[in-house]
Image (tube, rainbow over the protein chains, first blue to last red):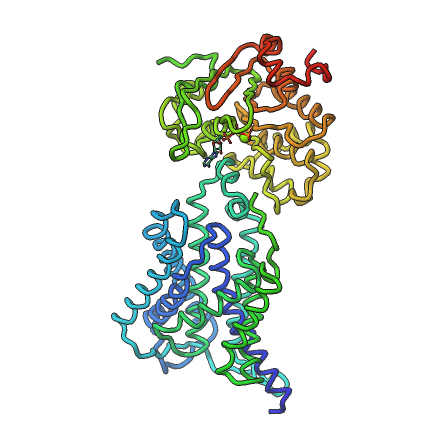
Length: 309
Length: 249
Ligand SMILES: Nc1ncnc2c1ncn2[C@@H]1O[C@H](COP(=O)(O)OP(=O)(O)OP(=O)(O)O)[C@@H](O)[C@H]1O
Ligand SMILES: [Mg+2]
């Protein structure tokens, strides 16, 4: 591989990581946009999502080391796993909102945010205690198809992450822009009291935001497993923190911002790791976050003064 | 108690608190079908709180609120909108980053999309040709007058029986105020009852049938608009400008 090829390979890796971070960042942004709440439980909804994906794949008979699937069987297994994982993660998010956060809805101050940290730890420990601390091989039905791109290599798992993320982001954008519920979500984010007086049931909007955001985190968790071939109770922290950074970088509360921020963070991680060293990736990511917040506090696509009136 | 067919909205002995702050104090209003009723009063006397109590954003601590004879004080806001109450909010409160058309659509949130929806939209466009021209514009970039028209149009999209308007003249030039009040009269003539908070007492009493005067959360005066206009206390407190704007005559 030439130097250029090495960078090309890192761009491919970065776009894949970025697509995964974007999926996760959207969940932070959807909930923040409506409740102005940073939902740290989201970190481990992603982690639980990856275990759900693992479980579903096994139930469908895909075992680690089993022969790859092809054609209709492959598409059916992947699509089925994706849908079940997203539903399960979405319902987990709704349960968290309903059981732990709604009772705190009218409290001012950091109570709700601290509760989300607590829930995150509960999820982490439940998985740790019931499934163990060792990382698990992730069953992977993908054939080892590759395609040379210049001197770099594009694998099927990268193509899969891109396709799934693009499709989900396109569906989300369509939903938020054009459906009745999506418009009600935007209205609630812009002026919750006025939205309520239009007859919008704000509680339902909050549930929708948690469901959608958590379902996307579930998809992200499944992609993580298929990409890295493992999962573990610990994966939520690093990925979650980077995705949160992506959401802030893009402008928290802003849907296209979360997508852009995710891609940027993914590329920084891959290219920064190449330029300096992988162990410096987080230093670079968080330094850039600090710089952006100093010079553009609302994030790249955010509005400087959030218009809440 | 049998519903009085002439009454659309009734407050009876309503008290409202924000924590320890007692805002509405044993307030009663009676708004008849087809009326324009003005609610006058100085700053912070509880006018907007009255509107929020009608919409169910604030719950009364005691007293009853009836709409079409049925108590509504325990109903959720959405249910009140479905029964036919729509707001024109203080300072307009459009959804600033949505288009004019999306704002109008949200006004019809509780109603099905269908031929009636299209009729309502055409009616709003006929009433406000300017809103039709601007329908694709982002609401936050409209002028104040245009925003007020969209705010009124948004309320009409709910096909309400009662529109609660909170200071529709706020921040508008005298010419625009006159246009807005003309439109309010037209809407009323088409059969919609209007309960309107106003600081611009002269204009409000010029189009209203009746009025209430609220002072630190209590109704201190009420009656026909004509008699309120003649009332010396009102003339002094709210109609200081009556001599210079003969609009009331
Ligand atoms: N959400 C709230 N929490 C606490 N106090 C409030 C709240 N809303 C209003 N108040 C207080 O209640 C009182 C009445 O407010 P309200 O908005 O009803 O007045 P208003 O008559 O509409 O005044 P203005 O003419 O300035 O619009 C004020 O003293 C106000 O500060
Ligand atoms: Mg007010």
